[in-house]
Length: 364
Image (cartoon, rainbow, N blue to C red; front, side, top):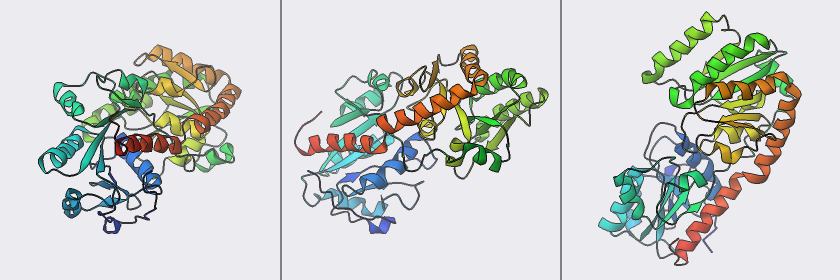
């Protein structure tokens, strides 16, 4: 078994590279789904074995080594014949290949793929050089042409929890006596924000008890897109009913406030937001992008519609606006489903099993 001694990493200087068994690089400064996965997983994994990230854009509670410590990876770790380099992006696979094959670091390479498309030739070349490959869903695994293990992402059930009193939480946010419909994430066409706005413009005038809230970063290249949506909302006279909140410091309270969460992405890697909403007790209407269809039980925890189909999205949402009690019932079932099927600990267990197989001499 792996060394499960816990290292209480607080800052990069706390990492003892000699004992480090796993490196999970993060070579992207901007927050992304991959970065969110690392932020959630590594503190939990660090309770089981010595692990650290390498890169920027991570909070201090995530174990992280310094770039100056990379040379320490050229030596064997204590108690193991090699370390594991767990990449989640092409550039991180390249870094691992350089360390293993050029600098002869005692290292095995693991890659997690969330892509929902056929990989480009260079990516395929990189993947073939991995020692183990993980797919985040059966759908993403279908695009891989190498042996792989399907490990779906989990959700932090200690962080994402239902509100003790949703009505009070909604009132605290300034939406007293309203039910909220949420759509969270980056505001852009890929995420289907325009499909959500169109559905809300069509539906909300008929349902005065519901209000829509949209959160998420608007990058410079999507500013015109977001401004256009806000202009449509203003023209419809719904600026008080469809609120753009921008990037919020903590998304968890907003999940607690929504009775219905909508994930209308046109395309996605995995997509964590429906799981976060379910763990917070909300029913979910989602497209079949990413792994959404593998998360939701139609007719029990929510609904799944074809990606990019605005009419189908509207119809699925309307079912819940017509029957708020159904939204509450499906939200309770979604909570139970998330807790039973998608705990973060389950993802950590499955990833550790892949590491163990490598350490024990298996290759897949």
